[in-house]
Image 1 (tube, rainbow, N blue to C red):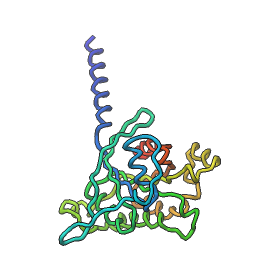
Image 2 (image 1 turned 45 degrees about the vertical axis):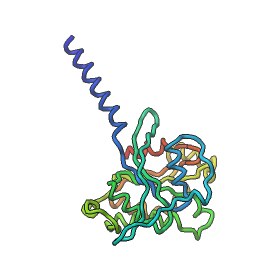
Image 3 (image 1 turned 180 degrees about the vertical axis):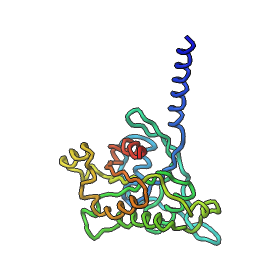
Image 4 (image 1 turned 90 degrees about the horizontal axis):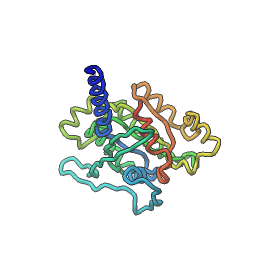
Length: 241
């Protein structure tokens, strides 16, 4: 009987530990070019359901601040719970603007919060117009900054110390607006786990190779933030890296 009691107790402790992991906050940084759907994604993670199409008045902007070092005031990070196939995670993220002047703020956010999971949101604009390099510029900036261990302006003393060795645990590249670009043919490939074969990712190959050389694991997936398709599932799978 004593042995059975010990087994039951051990099982109970294991369940408590397993459950407690869902409440451990995971600092996530969501970045990408303007209008790729970062704000829509943030709203989808806050309140599940179809999100209205956002207009120019809904674009994310940040006021300038600072007396000696000019920087942008970042919004407060908020906590969200995500679920997928029985797994749950608590993530902390903030909605940051995608305009090029905010790029250094992405890096400041990553370092100051010690972000473990970097999420880069892209769309299919480069498939529509081959001259549009907004998505490539956004990912390229982050990859180059990580490779050079760039220290953005406005870091705290702790941030400047952390910047010397900072590196995220993983990067998740999400191709948003799948409801617009994913054909039935490529949906089958996505189901088979071969979404990375889609031409939407071709322009990012070299940057992804650089991340591999830096020993930063990369997960590639597709979502529709507006309609909530594959959003939480993609993030949960990304945490498996």
